[in-house]
Every structure is written in structure tokens, then in C-alpha cells.
Image (tube, rainbow, N blue to C red; front, side, top):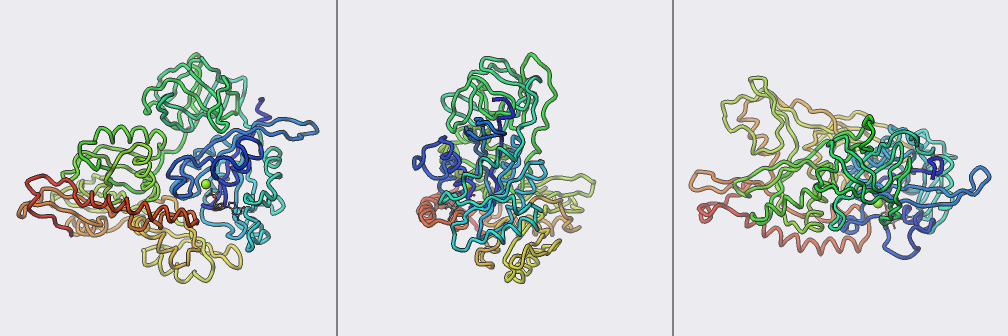
Length: 573
Ligand code: GDP
Ligand code: MG
């Protein structure tokens, strides 16, 4: 396949607007998966994705499609990337866009443009992708495609005549999708006669094959048996296997310019597979590709083995999982109450939750996680600054004067039916929000931008927002800078931090001497809050899971406290 017969596109949308279902239909239409076989949302492979009904990992699949192009029947190679819709995983979306030249922007024909529609549109727009608007779910009785077309025009200046109308449920309108992809999206721009440059898109560990990397061949071509090097680590490898995701791994022996596929190259440790790295032929020299922006961590929490002796097993599990989820940061830490563990940085609370669940389900690791905290910056009298994301690392010396404290803030986008504007403004001002923008998408929907302290939204903002708007609000955020909090003395600040950053503090003490202290989050209190998909059987499953969660609470309740303290005091403040 020469690059002019290749198209790389992703499917982007707000949660639940039908990305994964549309991906299923396109895979069926091209005979890549058999109709009616396999599960719905075929590309949502992880157990956590199936249980929650959300996509967490972007997945690529290659399809072949015949199309009459400029008068001749031509077979095209199409790479489709299904992406997550939830705000916590937009890092995953922006990474997958790097291998695409176009995107299907899917919008629910009844719900219309939502907060993540806006966020994902801008991700694609800033990457210079060709955007094809797809108004999906037109089978619904409340579908109103004309209203959605008007929204797309007013919000994004997208030409209403370019919108495709589909139902991924009934199949209506689907035959127009791939012809539009082929005719409107440009082929990948790489040079086939230049030295090989591949972008490492994603990686995971396979028990039998070792590390499997997903790659996009930007320039040149790669064949099995060739020697490649990593620009990031300087290590060299022999390519043992190379092929495409069709949708299962299918060896092809070669990947040409513009193709997306997988390679197996005997990387021994998952640390060698760095997402965003450039791979090239060892015999040539190339300029590395731009790579990816580092992920910005919004919340931090401690992750400890539920049984203190499992530290090595947890270490191993975390290493494997972070290979597949490069957006988590991990540093070792130890706590007197919980022993050796890790402090992990996440992109949001849902991301944190999904990470814990994947640790358990995919690696059998049982973990205790501490209450999530947000990263503060403290400045001391001597001018030094310290980033603090673990309250335990606050200096205990009361003489060390804190002269300033900055808290992280976010830029939030909120879209709501107009009748809820008043209550949402009240909520945002209670949460110390600053309104930056307030406008109307159309006669029924308002669009607001707020700057909010991260701490105020981390715990229950989204639930609260949903509840005061009868579930109609949609919400998205991106990180903004730190805001100065106050110039006060250590004592006051520390009290403040104590009150705001901890939910439950367990202190173990003998007499008045505190020997252990830890904060432990209440796990799975409101399981349904995390159920972003709407269907009932899924909710029931989650409630069943809650029973298991409660067992876990018990375990948390019996945190290993050093022996001497055991009969003494366990104070919950
Ligand atoms: P995603 O979060 O964007 O990937 O959305 P999913 O593909 O997981 O779909 C969310 C829900 O919408 C599922 O229950 C689908 O069955 C349903 N759905 C998807 N497309 C359509 C459609 O065209 N019409 C209707 N009525 N439901 C749809
Ligand atoms: Mg999905």
C-alpha cells in the first residue's frame, strides 16, 4: 500500500455519544470482525472498560475497504483509532491523534454538543486534523439533527452540509462514513524514500511475546529482521515480529510509510518502551520526532500493598501497568502505618480509580490507597520553593516560615440547559470559582468557562453538578496555573491543609506520642457515581462489586499498626 491508499483517522466524542459502537459497525462493514459475533464495543478489551461501559485506552484497528476513487475501484487501508471520551483520558486522545490526519467528531443527535465534544474538537483542530462531523443516534425519538448542525456551525464553524447523519444502532447512514473518510481526509504525509522514523504510540506486556509496541511509521519502511534503535534510550533491537492490528495482531513482515502497526523486538523491560519515543534503523541517523507533551498530574495518592509483604509483587504489577498507562507517575514512599509503597500521580479521580481497578483485575494486586491530594507549592522565608503532593512531607519544624502557598487551579468548561444556569453559578461561586465566559450555544443551552481551584472539584464537584442539573450538565477541564493562596504562618497553613486535604486521619499513638499516622480513603462509597455509561445491568454489576468493596473496607479498617500500639489508641479525627 502506497501512502495515497492509506487513511488514518480517529473517532472522538463526548462520553456515550457512540464512538465505540460506531467503530464496531465500521469493523463489521469492512468484514474485519464478523457481524453479530463478539461483544458490543469490540475494541473495549479491558475488563474495567466492559464493566464501566467506558473506553479507557485508545485502540487501533486496521481495515481494508474498496472504494471507487477517481473512476477506479481501489482498495484502501484504513486505520481507525477509537478513543476515550472522559476528561481524565484526554491525554490518551491527544496521543492517538499524533498518528492521524483526520477525525470523526461524533455528536449525539439528541444531546448535542457537550463539554468533551468541545475539548476533543480543539485537540483535533490544534493537531490540524480534517474533521468530519457525524451526527449519531438519529434513530432516537428526540433526535434533532438540524439543531445539532446549527450548534456545530456556531461553536466550531463546521459547515452543516458536511455533517453525516448516522445511527450506529440501526445502521442508517453508515455507508457514507468510509467514503467520506477516504475522500476528505488526506493520506499520511511521510516520505517513503527517507530513512525510517517510527513513533512509539503505546506499549503493553504480553506473557508470551514480551513487550509489544504500537507504532506509526512516519517515514520509510520497516521489515522483520531489521535492526532498530531508540532515540530515547540509545538501545538497539532486532525486529522479531511486525504486523497490523486486524483487529488481532496479524503478522505482515513489513510496515510501510503511513501505516500503524505493532512490533515485537525483544525489549526486556517495560521501561525500555517509552511512549512518544522515535525508533529508527540502527544503520541511519535521523532527527527524532516531536514526541508527546508530558502528562500533567492533577491528583496524587499513596498506593500500598494490602498485605505489607506483597511489596515486590506490587512493584512488579505497577511496572507492568505503567508500561500500558504511561500517564501515571510513580515514586517510592514509605509510611509508618502502611509500610513501603508508592506515591502515584494521576490525571484525575476516575483515572486513579481505573488504575487501582486494573492493578487488581489484570495483575491480581490488592492495594490500599490513601486519600487523594492535589499538588501545592510552598515557598519558605529563605526563598526556596517546594512542590508538595503528600501532606506527610510538609516540614514539621514550626520555625520554618512559609511565606506563600500556591494551589493548583483548572479551566473548566460547563455546558448546561439554560434553566440550570442560576444553580450552576451558585455552585461555582461556593467552590471559589471565577467566571471567565458565559454564552449560549443555542436557545436551549448555555456554555460557561470557570477558573476553579482543583481542590474544590477533585472530590465531589462533578456529582454535585450532575445532581443540581438533573444529570444534564457536562463538564470538562484542563489544567491552569497555580493561584496564590495566602501569606500566613506555618501553623495556620498547616491547620488549613489538615482540614482540606485529609478525609480520615488514622493516628496510632502510645499515650501522647504519635507513632503512626495515615490517611485512608473511603473506598467505593458511591459506586454508581463512577458509572458514566447509562445502562442498568452495568449498574447492577457495580452494586454487586460494592459488596466486594466493603470487604476491602474491612481490610482498610485493620491497617497494619505497629504491634506496640495495637492496644493503645486508634483515633479517627
Ligand atoms: P462511547 O462512550 O462514545 O464509546 O459510546 P458507546 O459506543 O459505548 O455507546 C454508548 C451507548 O449508546 C451504548 O449503550 C450504545 O448501545 C448506544 N448507542 C450507540 N450508538 C447508538 C445509536 O445510533 N442509537 C442509539 N439509540 N443508541 C446508540
Ligand atoms: Mg467508547
